[in-house]
Length: 125
Image (cartoon, rainbow, N blue to C red; front, side):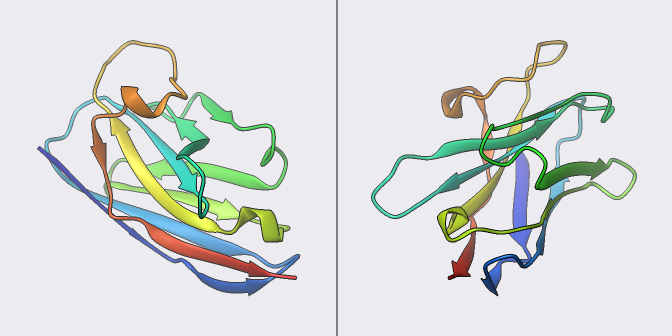
């Protein structure tokens, strides 16, 4: 079992920044972790992911150059630094863990095994 708890969401004006954090507890192994978001009336979508060592990252085109994903395995945390936020970034943000090892980073929701409860990010125009 893996438990994931997100924090750091909130209300920010367009152009502002937020930093989301995901605390990980339970089973520890060499797994990929990712961030997804879900806007009202839409499905859950991939935002960014990072492999176990942090040597590989992947971003959705919509956030490239604005968001940065990172992880600290010693502290069992993962973060998402979000800069230059836009109103269309408004969504609930979820962290997730993909327990499959030695696989390329996956962007598909169904491939992630554990999810946090989500944190709301609202960007006003």
